[in-house]
Image 1 (cartoon, one colour):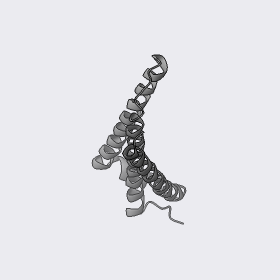
Image 2 (spheres, one colour; image 1 turned 180 degrees about the vertical axis):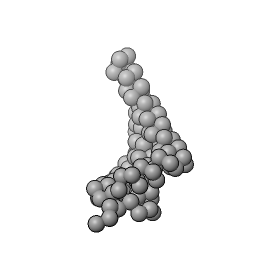
Image 3 (cartoon, rainbow, N blue to C red; image 1 turned 90 degrees about the horizontal axis):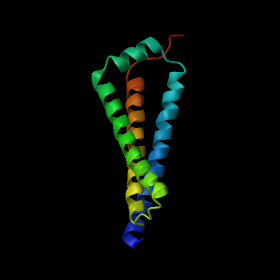
Image 4 (cartoon, one colour; image 1 turned 90 degrees about the vertical axis):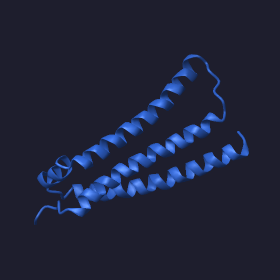
Amino acid sequence: MTNISFSISLIANLISILLALTGFYFVYKNWCIWKNARFEILKARAFLNKKFLEKNWLYIVIAGGLIMVRRIYRFFELTFEYEGHPEIEVIFDLIGCAVILVLVLMAYQWYKLMHTHSVYKES
């Protein structure tokens, strides 16, 4: 692996870690609200909002597609004893970073939905 490839992989992995921590924050906050949410309001906000649903489906398709690319390549490595090019690992580090980014964006969409609107149960 060349120096530039190593640097790109290192940066992609650092960004992935930071994104994963950010995503964990959003998921934790969403979970805290979820426990006290009025589900009829939350369902209405999420499922009657076409833009929200379209973004979520787009994020799922992108993440799934990127993971599929990596799995297909790995399948060929294992099945045909293909010795991949070492530089391809840089691409896979970038793909991994992109998948985490998409998952964070999806968690953020839910975060915005639940924090922007009153979905709490009344005491």
